[in-house]
Amino acid sequence: VSHGGEAPSLTDLAARIAGIVGLQHVLDGTRQAAYATDAGESRGLRAAPDLVVRPGSADEVAATMAACHERGVAVVPRGGGTGLVGGSLAFGGGVVIDVGRLNRVLEVNPAAWRMTVGAGLTTTHLQRIARENGLYFPPDPGAAENSQIGGNVATDAGGPHAFKYGTTGSWVTGLEMVIPPGRVVAIGGANRKDVTGYDLVSLMVGSEGTLGIITECTVRLIPAPRARAAMTAVFPTSEAGCEALLAVVGSGLVPSAIDFLDRGSLAAAHGGFPAGLDEDAGFMLIVEVDGDEAEVDASVPVLEEVLGSATQCDRFRTVRDQRELWRWRDTVTGAVRALRGGKLSADVSVPAEHFQDALAASAAVAGEHGLDFCAWGHAGDANLHSTFVFDPGAEGALARAATAADHLLVRISAMGGSIAAEHGVGWAKSGRLSLQLGEEALRLHRGVKELFDPDGLLNPGKKS
Ligand SMILES: Cc1cc2nc3c(=O)[nH]c(=O)nc-3n(C[C@H](O)[C@H](O)[C@H](O)COP(=O)(O)OP(=O)(O)OC[C@H]3O[C@@H](n4cnc5c(N)ncnc54)[C@H](O)[C@@H]3O)c2cc1C
Image (cartoon, rainbow, N blue to C red; front, side, top):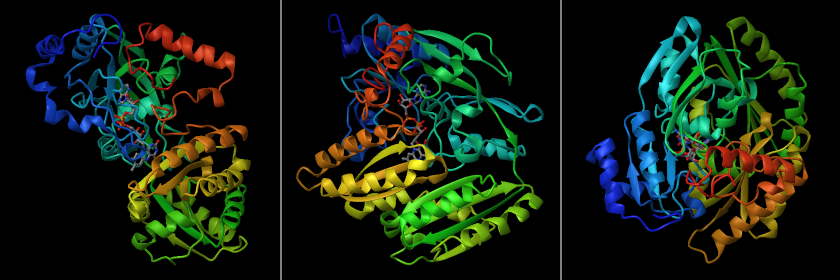
């Protein structure tokens, strides 16, 4: 577990930490097994931690970090473990700090549209409390039942409704966190406006556990929209679908979500589609509108007109209860994995005008590496999950998929796109920041890390 200096005794460290958090919250061999992977396992990312600790308070997180720091041992923060890029895995060993016990609801203030919760509260739980108070927390990443708000902040998680409402970072006003070598710090707060000092809250958003361990989050909420309606429109080709996408965006309406699935992902997931779907559907747009009843009533016919008159729209369908549709949409990742047993997704985004180019580049790269390919994602944000599908038992298949994904990042950055749109850099894309960040930007990036974590013991090797 040593990262510099003499190798400390793991037993000694475990005993010290047990004294801080209680012996039952230091996990042993079998209980540690789940922490060797996250949801990016199909990329071949695995790393067994030396120790897993589940502290019960920010002070316990701080004392645990301090104990590790004194011994030169790395610390890796972990939320729900739904990350897709190995961000919460302890490559090179170290102590994983699982914040799942920090899941208390500390304040709900419906009148002020705000709540403060422990970082370990699951995303679904937070959404439900908001709903029970007539309010709405819009970020809706796909693994919400298991992901945690601290993890969502750390990855700036998006999801379909980021198109209208922005990613998690748009909703965070205050954080409590533990920074190296083991200090508790509060930044931001309940103020909706605040330019005192640099915007440290935004700096923590998307920092992927490399600057501090988030222990508490204050988020703002909005009154829940009273009505929603969703349309699905099917096109023979992605070109036709992309044309319709431009028409929707140009219609003057602001949909709450615009998602897409291409031919390959529809072929994988069509069986579960709530309304039946042709096996050879080429491209689907899912467009949702929300607001009060009158607003939704007025938007639906406009969208039906735009989609219905789009060239080559094979068919479209409007549903007033869109929950079943989104539940189906959440099954796509699993359905694609089930095709061949292995999949590797590159989560990228591009300026809107390059969306079709990015799809074409993804398919071209797959072809060059002899891989099956499909894509889905958040079309309104031009955010694609370009996915290479393979049989994990086939020799060299995973390595080919990894190379293909890396080549795609090069093409995406050449379009002015982002190599890490909403799933993070983690371990999987570390070393590739220079594709997108210039020399000076990289210098600032590294300087920030150095300021927060001069000894490099917090989630080493990630987002670097
Ligand atoms: C089926 C599926 C669908 C998904 N859909 C989406 C989607 O639509 N949009 C999207 O953005 N993502 C999506 N994801 C990815 C994932 O759910 C998000 O990245 C999520 O925000 C991770 O949260 P987590 O609590 O599971 O974090 P983890 O996986 O535990 O950790 C992720 C990163 O955050 C850090 N971290 C976690 N908690 C803390 C903390 N308290 N303090 C500091 N750092 C911390 C970790 O060190 C790691 O670097 C999906 C994943 C799956 C499996």
